[in-house]
Image (cartoon, rainbow, N blue to C red; front, side, top):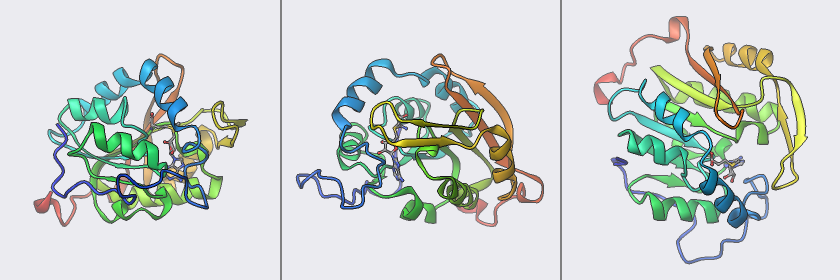
Length: 226
Ligand SMILES: C[S@@+](CC[C@H](N)C(=O)[O-])C[C@H]1O[C@@H](n2cnc3c(N)ncnc32)[C@H](O)[C@@H]1O
């Protein structure tokens, strides 16, 4: 179940224009929101893997879903497993769909790189299908934000091809870039996270699981306030 302790927040008031902001932070997804929604919700690729990963989280874990889209299937699987999910996405239409489907889940229509939800701390952060939509420097910045937002025993799950690659997104035609597994290991190490597992879902999407390493894996000073 999705039961945030703060009310759902959407930057774009419901009922207003769904036009993308002048600088479209959604990497083109607002423009193809309907097409994406239908395709993603029909296939639900990765739902079983997310469900399995959720079993490793503490009961009632707080999870931040980066680039949450409509919340199907990622937030849906997490909510079904009893997690409290917060979502961030820069596409107003997808955020509206998320809010309609998961009214109890706080959601922000914001750029990941400047989202206010990074002021909070989470048991887990998940980023499915979004990291590689960001430029390489922005990917590294996001890792820093994730490291700061994770609790000492937290987990970060993200998808990206394990081989360095540049390609055009099938739906938006926008440039996508994977830094590749070696560079992701190094970039995460730079923010004191380490990759502890890798796996693939039924659609051959590659997942990395990262955790705080060494000294960072100490109890949080705010552990009593979880
Ligand atoms: C391929 S979709 C994945 C959606 C969802 N995670 C899923 O698995 O269905 C990528 C999502 O990331 C969002 N997105 C891309 N760049 C973003 C950014 N800089 N800030 C916030 N959202 C972003 C898009 O709006 C889109 O909903």
